[in-house]
Length: 145
Length: 145
DNA sequence: TCCTTATTGTGAGCTTCTCAAAATAAGTGC
DNA sequence: GCACTTATTTTGAGAAGCTCACAATAAGGA
Image (cartoon, rainbow over all chains, first blue to last red; front, side):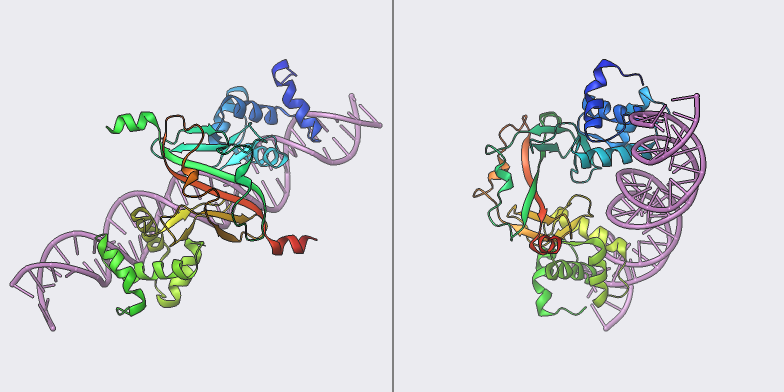
């Protein structure tokens, strides 16, 4: 993959974290950016449009590494494989439709990072508040009636 | 398993939901009650203390059914199998130690079921707010220093 | 262009959980 | 208490999602 303009910003991020810029990493970051809330499986499918020889293992390795670096965020809706997104650093939440699995981003409910302050944390130092709303989306509600 | 007094309350709940009272169901409910936040695997181990022939499949079937009935609550901490508890109906939250996996219950932070009201729900009808705090517990913090 | 080593690919395998069908036992009526 | 119906459990196989070890490849510096 030649250094095209649209991916330059990811290349910089990777170098800033001491990572080599590979076509696999760029493909994964690009896939997640274009299709937020996607699973390893669908990320593999997307990357293969540009990189037919991409392997599932590479996707898992890259996703794990980039998530640890903070370039990607991972979350696990109930009864579903892990999903990834490029929107990081704002500790936003997710609403998941229990019928169709559709996922929407939800801004923090009570202002700035209030979810990081539980009433009684049992002495734990809280780093992340993972909030997932589960409900029924408008389409599924309409179909049910 | 003879109808001992201590399990009578579970037997009633099962009958109230039109379920037969079996020693496997009682064993699962008892195991989860005595060890909250336990996985299917450890529930199997606990039930086998009383029922050596208990099978993993029965545990999964029973857990799935009782969760659907509302007698048990299921939640999935990141990077961990599903955990079960008998404390249901109050939509409380969980704090998980990212080092040792320890889980603590956390009451709702902002009063009564505030978490059911996201700022923008994209038209979804929210049923559950699944909140998981991830942090480091006191023991793990002490060990690290 | 060569070299070092980070990164990816190959192949096996693990954990968690699910499905189909046969065996068992709870609850009902006699 | 005994037989009968069918819910429930067990047996056995297997899928999904993810991880590990090690060989092959390629990014970035000399």
